[in-house]
Image (cartoon, rainbow, N blue to C red):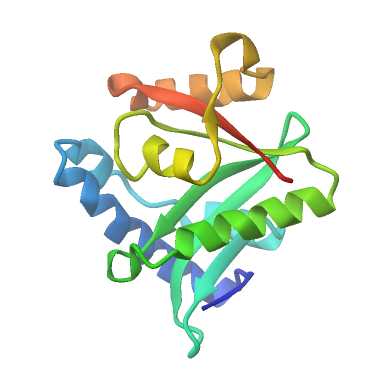
Length: 169
């Protein structure tokens, strides 16, 4: 496996990865998440052109997973991490998170942050195994509060969500 910045010709594959990863939500009674459209090509292009999108590839450069991240409140915020179902449970997500942490540390950012579903096994419980911890209410930064409001406006608060943080060290 190799991690590299996303290329413009990867973007349609990223949509396919998102659809594949989303199907898992159908199996746990969250079909609305499974049915949600993947990011648009315009949104994907914005992340890709800004250098905020990384992909994991096979030795033949087949894209299997991706991660989008951007600065938020002085940290690197993981916007989206998705792994195609056929490549799940192989440590690819962990490698993308490690890459993001190294990138953030090199830029002087003390932590990674994210928002996620509290009770979905491959969400908060997974991130806890990757050294993230759930933030208490008083620890949630203004940018994270704004992000959570955007998620609520999108209907994601139908299921419990949390903000999480991991030091880059």
